[in-house]
Structures are given as structure tokens and as C-alpha cells.
Image (cartoon, rainbow over all chains, first blue to last red; front, side):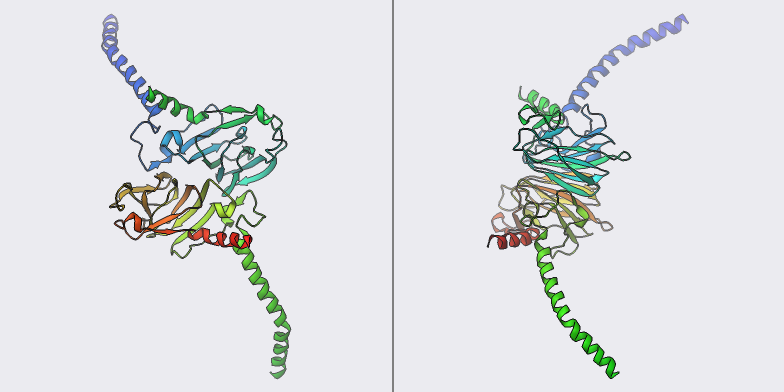
Length: 203
Length: 203
């Protein structure tokens, strides 16, 4: 037992430098992978497999967001494309942005809530629109809106196209919150990582 | 026989005004349907079923083009989305445009030809890129390019997103045609109909 134990100790001692090396390598790889999909890092291929692009929920349960072609991530200047999946019952915040936005529904169904009166003091009770697989709709610039997966049985998957990237989002707590009280979130969640990486590049 | 014939004659005579009415109605309906999907005509619904949108090959065999959200058709100002299907062996012309363009490949596979040197006198031999289902790529502003369905067995279906609509396309006969000789096609084929309709509205 003692010899065994000693051998184990030796093995551990022998492995220690490897562990340290592995740890350092992991840190380096993780730092690299954080920024490796951002445009500031060279090596992005022109044709990309969407299944292999970074996917995250950015702290929102039931969301999957992929930036298919983005401003910070791929150097787009005038247009940006996301692939988003909402599990049953999940939704976007009530929000507005000063850009055009087009949705193409790839799978599932849900409800679009749209408050078109941006001249009032607050969005007010929104209109409801049914959205469904193979449908398309666009959000007029600055109209407050919210997309819900109201289908209990199926994911809602949409391609989202915005102009004037990166997106600057004003978020409302409810439909009667004054426009002036809506909170600006910029950079938006999926842009934060690349923005940090590009700031590091500038140093 | 004679009576029968007479009855037929009477029937025909009786139907004549209906035929004329039907003919006039058909003409009116056809004129209306030509412009009914254009933004200048009111009544476009916010959520649209893509399967019910106008689809045409615009004189190009093997092409199916649908304007999912367009400038002339739906009043978009900053971004436009098309759904295009190319049958095996068919392709776009060699062309360039002064806007960003993103492709999302929904089905099939093919080849992207891209001549990135827009500083030369002509595009020159292009680079070749394999494109495949669930891939994405974008065309840098003003780079000459061509998309081919090089898969003999399957349609190639793509969502195309462009900025700065409506598109102004410069078409090349081959990769060695000088940039200055490329022919401007504006309005592009799918925009012509709505542009005509909106010009009529201005009169």
C-alpha cells in the first residue's frame, strides 16, 4: 500500500507540470475561442456552416441565438442576420430599435405584439398578429414590439434581419412605460463579447 | 339537329354579353393583380404567407424568385429579402452591386464564384467556394460574383438579403469584361412591375 501510495505521489508530482501546462493552455484556448469568431480576429472563412457557429442563450432561458452574419462578428456594415429559436412560452422583451427588422418564420408559430403609435407617450395596448411557419413580417422603425412563442408544443424558429447594425435596443418593462423611460441596452447581449474583444485589440 | 343548333346559337347569343363582361373583368383583375402586391396599393397585410407571395422566373429558365420583403413591393427602405430557387445547372449572371449581400442556403448545394479584386480593370478569374445546405456567406460591396447550382440532382434554395434596396445590378458577359463595360440593369427584373405600377400612381 505504502509503495503504491508513493508511486501515486510520484505520479502526481510527475503530472503537476503537465497539469499547469494544461491549465494555461485551457485558459489560452478559452480566451482565443471567446474572440475567435469575431471579425477583429483573422481567419473567418467566407462560407460558414451555420450549425458550427457560436450559439448561446445569453442568460435568457429557452432562447438560442446565433449571429449568422453580424457587424462585430463578421464585419457587416449595413445589415445583420440572426437565427433565433424560442422554446414554448418564451419571448423577446418588449422593445424598440431605430432600424428596419424583417422576420422569416422557419418553424413553429406564435404571436407578434406590435404597438404602432410611436407618437404617443408610451406604446399602449399592442395589436396582436398570428405568425406561423413560412410567414414573414417586418417591424416599422421604432415601433415597440414583442415576439412570443405562444405554441405550447413546438419551438419557434425565426431568421431575423436588421439594418443599421449593431442593434441598439430600448427595453420596456410593460406596454405603458413611457418611451423616455425605456432602457437602452447597448451593446446588446450577443455583441458584448466581440466588442470586448475588439476593445482589447485596440490597446 | 337544326333545333339543337338554334338552341346553341341562342345560348351563344345569350352568353355574349357575359363573355364580354367576363373578358373586361379578367382584364381589370389582371391589371389589379399586377399591382396588388406593390406597396403603392393599400391592403398589404403585415404578416404574409410566403407560399402565397408572387413567384416568377422573370424569363430565366429554372429560376423561381419571390420577393419576401421588398422596397417597391412592401415599402422597405434599408433592407430587402428574396427567396430564390435554382434548378440543377442554373445560375445567376456574373454581376456586382453597390450593397451588402448575405446568402443563407436553405436547401441543396452549389458553387460561389467570387472575384474580389475590384481595383483591377476587370473581375478576372474568380475564386471558387463550395456552398451547401445550412451554410451562409456574404458578398463584399461591389465584388463581382456568380452563384451556380452545380448539383445535378437537387434544387438550390437560398434566402438572399441585400442592403440599400432597390438593387442596381451591373452585369458582365464574362470574367474578363472591363468593369466599365458591365451593363446596368435597373430596375432589376422583379422590381420592374412595381415600378411601373408606382409610376402609374403618380400620374
